[in-house]
Length: 360
Image (cartoon, rainbow, N blue to C red; front, side, top):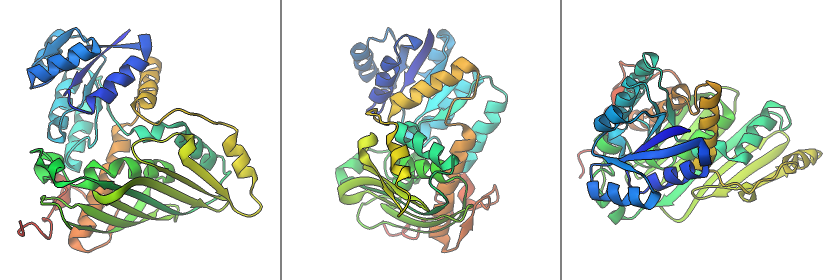
């Protein structure tokens, strides 16, 4: 049986613990780590975990592990992942996996000298409907991709940002683009493939934070698909929506934090009713979530393959975010591959600074 530990026992750690338990005898949660010893002890008791450690160094010194789940606030993700890689332990890290492209490249470099691998939690890639959609695209059933939209319209009040690490560039890395919409547009990117260029804006409308509270982007993909992306924490009717218009059908999903097949609809173009028939050949009630990704993570370990989502996949999504901020803050079109070490948006998503930086 494989052995796992969770670092950081806040809210999202529960999703990881559930996913580990659902994996049955494939893996065991043997330890937890948290700077708050009382919270760690309570979490360990709730999930029947035998040992609690005050830090990752102490954990790695004692426990033989197959994977460490990093569920801390974002600023700690990369330092903790680097510790695990140095100990040749696999990492499953929550979003956002890093605060910048430069940090992602640090992980890429560290991974080259380690037998451990880093996977990012982008669980919506692994729902049965998303897997089916990508397969049908690959088989040519849907025809050419033409138009898409990706909206993450959520609501977070002022009290949400009272948590010290929220709403700042140096601890969270960005606003809803980094911390909220990332799941939806990562799924979009996994469906549509390489993006080519971005035209964007980001604004601070209401919340008293250093980051944006709304961003929007117009995106052109390498295959010619055009897409719009909205990320908001100001929207009282909360929803997560993706729409893909292909030559032969429109495929849509509307959910909030996870979907089943019931949230997806397929509308055929005239003369293409066979698309709906193909879609309905497989039906599932499984909710997209950590459990789906955990199963594929373990399958990869068992087969000796690199666990999904790889750092290469992750870098593509993080580069998309950096390009969105760069376009928004410079008022220019930003192309894929444009943000390198000489760009101010490589070391921090804030880049040259938000237009409202001196307004607080």
